[in-house]
Image (tube, rainbow, N blue to C red; front, side):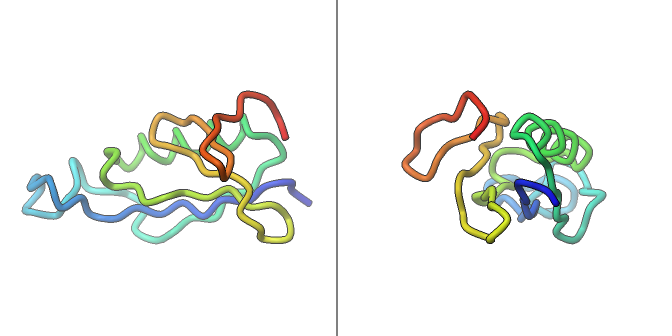
Amino acid sequence: MYKYKVNLKHEPNPDINYVNGSGYWGLPIDKNNILITANTLQEIQDKFDDWKNRNELGGGNLPYIYIRDTENNKIAHISYNCRIWDMDGNEIKKEL
């Protein structure tokens, strides 16, 4: 069993008009949401960064990406720059 799970999803950015007005800088490879699981926050950061880069996503393509525990409670979120924040907006720099 994993300690954390994250549903990765993206959306068009209304501020950009590239690739035929799609709202993306490029054409995302992953069209559907992806569920990732991990035992460490570093794993989440690595998987998130790989997914973000693979899909050529900008900051405006990402809604809040929540990190959940095994009971599906929101415990943190990850920002575009791969930093992790608790639910009060404080950066988390070590494992929970």
